[in-house]
Length: 326
Image (tube, rainbow, N blue to C red; front, side, top):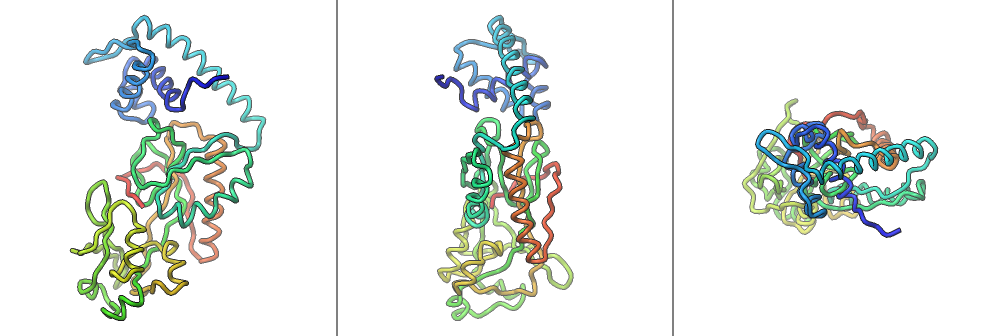
């Protein structure tokens, strides 16, 4: 059978049907946890593909054209058959099947996810993984992703966030840098050092370094000569090369620390962490593949946390606040 549909096109058909049922792009967006603009763009692509107008748009409402009404009736029946097929097979099969599309940031992908994926694939031989290693923001609907892993606070209430771990951070420098410039002993000492800053691409602002001192939490940002955008691993590479100090996740620095390429400083001021979460849309059916992936990763990461004496929370929650790359 030749393939006529891409995953994004099928998603556009689902959006079209919901807009047709509700008579409003805005209502469809609210029901699906999307923006009206995303719904409008998706339907516009569908109309361009079909070379017909599906809706008559006014400032207050949308209504189906004759072509749109005919298309809606056929699509509604087809989607109903797909749902029935999914219900029929998910009750029978114990193993996840198909392709799982995942987006993960460079830090977590290289130092956590990629070393674990072969074990997941061995456990689920009928599951395929398509992994995008990138720190950019993604659109689940338009790009067809099933799940994303992100550092920092999750993006918005349209996504479910499953915390994978609260990753501890430390301040690191190369032995050569410390021989030349000395070892900082306090927060005030950092002002005299080259502190390599990571800038969030979405804001252009440096991510503050986080500490606990005197029983209080401190967030510090520096006016530094060294700034890296988009990829945190660039900060670590600069630190290894002797450019200055960087604050990064312990799991990122671990190998360089063991090889003697980095040394941790200010250990008595550590104690804070940044979360990594698995994100997926509220209104998306949680497939067997997504569930298997999240459960596997939680089990693996929590195993590491238990061995280190740190709990890793796993309760699902609604996401809130702007996203951060990692």
